[in-house]
Image 1 (cartoon, rainbow, N blue to C red):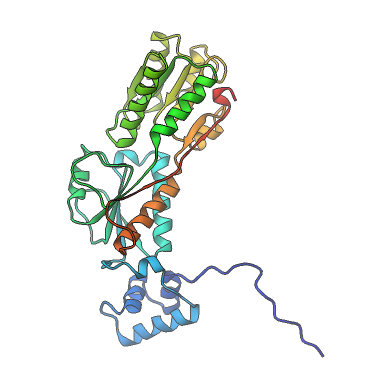
Image 2 (tube, rainbow, N blue to C red):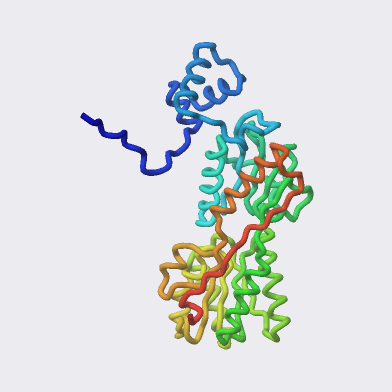
Length: 334
C-alpha cells in the first residue's frame, strides 16, 4: 500500500537567531553569545549545550556581527535627546535601530546622559551641536554614526543623511505650481542640521521667486495651542498668505482648527504641507501633503553603517544618503 509523501513546507522558514539558540540551551542570550565565541566564563557543560542547540537549530551567526573586528560587548548604544522622544519620527527611528540590531545579533542600550555603558559603537539621532550631552558622547572614543549631519566640533565615523534641501525645494515648487505665491514656513527652533537646512532652503527659495519670507519659529515639541497661536498671528498679520509649510512632526495637523477659524479653506484658498509625514497627516481632513522621511529605514541604515565600519567593511568618514519622498495629498489642492 503506497504511503503518502511527506508534507513539504509551503513558505520560507525564518533562520534561527541567537535568542533561539539561548532558549534551546536554557541560557541567557549573553551566555549563548559567549559560548559560541569562546569568550567569557562559561562552563564546558554549558558551552556544549549551546553548541548542540546551535547545530540542532541550524544557527548561522550573522555575518555583520561575526565580523565585528573590534566587538567586545555585542552592544550598540543609542542616544536621543529626551525632549525629542514625544515625536513619532524618533520612535519609528528607534524601532528601525532595534530591528536591524536584532538581525545583526546585537543588543541596543539607550543612553540618556553623557555617561556610556559598555558598547562597541554609538548612534546619535539628529545631534544638536549646542547639546552638552552630545558633545560628551562625541568625545568618548567610541565609533559614532549620526543620523543627519553634525554641526559641532569633531567628526563622526559615519553619517546617514537625507537631502532636505532638495525635498523642501520640490515641495515649495509644488505649492507654486498649485498657485501659491506667498508661502509661509513654521520652523522648528532646534539647531540640528535638519532644522537649519530647512530654514536656509526656504529663504533661498523665497529670494529666487520674489516671495516675501514669512518665517515663524516654534519651540520643538510645542503644544497644539502654541502652534495655533503662531499660525493665528501669522494669518492676522499676513492675510495674503496662501500656503503654510510646517517643519515639526505633527504640527500641520495641529493647526488645522486655527486655519478654519480664520475663515480659510485648506486645499482651496490656503495650501498646507508638512516636512514630516505621519499617520496624523494621512488621517487629517483633508489629508496633508508631506515629506516621508522614512525614519525606520534611517534607523536601520545607521546600524548597518556602524556594523560595516566596526567590521572594516566601510571606511571611517563614510556618508550615505537616504532617499526621501514627497507624498501629495488633498491639502495642496490635488
